[in-house]
Length: 134
Image 1: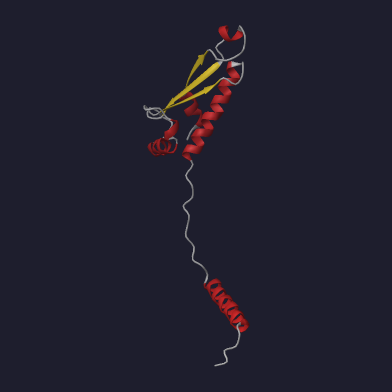
Image 2: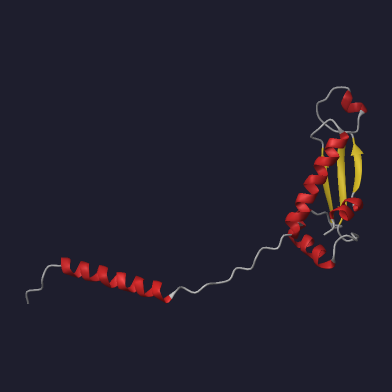
């Protein structure tokens, strides 16, 4: 995965932010909307595309594009930086492949110790019983 190539494929759109902010809200487009189309990406291999389509499927639109918004700051540049960092984090998590767990056998010494302990406890309990006088 080439980060610079992926960032060059991103498309940004500046939109007027909603919420409180007085007259400044009506004049400044500080909200940033990032869109990334996985299908048309040249920076990702086919395997990476399939991984992303399965791992982040809930975040994608029906056209397999990822859309992120950021209106945390009043500065458009800061919002752009924040949304790019968020995007890269999502992509890295989506491309992460967990290690396959290898099943391990229980050592024979552990099995022997457990059986020995069970027998010992059984003998202790039998010695506590009342003697049979028949």
